[in-house]
Image (tube, rainbow, N blue to C red; front, side, top):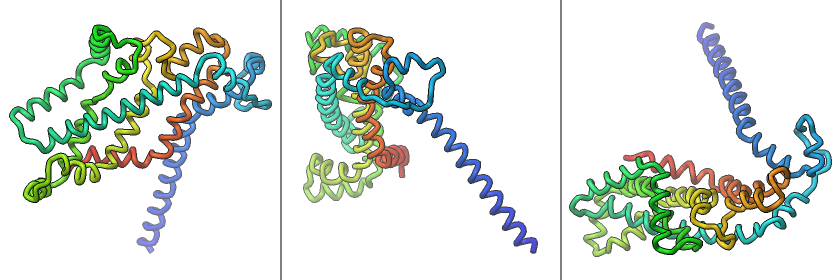
Length: 287
């Protein structure tokens, strides 16, 4: 009887703990998702209806999509989308090539001072971003690349953190496999393409998604290096809408523009969230 009572009490404690955990997770989800809900809700309110609300309402009685039309008509938001897509695709593709080759060199190639060079690479992560931005700005300006896609792209084609993450993945592959491939006459490049890249696919997918998000949200560098609307990205488009579009007081139209700009990233994250978590966990586990 005591055993049955203990088992029953254990089940009750587990049930209570699970319920409390679920309640906390639901509350946390509400806190995290509420800003997105408020953003979408505000974008569906008319300008007059929004300003007439002395107490903000958590619902909308007469939704309107006029704000979304205004978001595209106030500034060339479509062009900003195209510029951002070009910037994101080229930057991500070039960066994947650079970090893959760098990670392979640090993980598999033997050369003098390899560990020292890698430590120097890691130490670059401690340099404040502001200093890097200033250096990049001076360099790009001296090369006459302001207001150009090369000027936007070049400073973003590598990442020390992604090199480190990919290097850790490559080092998980046994050395015996590499030596066996070399005995069979396989070149380093072929070994990289046929063995390491397929094995590290989850991490590469994760890096790709994170880089796409980073490029899409890029604000400081594009704002600093471009002052021509032809090269504006969507992040700059929001500022342009506030300054030269429908003004700072039309909050519903601003929220509509933010929804349009945020939608691609939200969709990407919802589709690839499992790959992102799997890649990060794989990169952080060695052995």
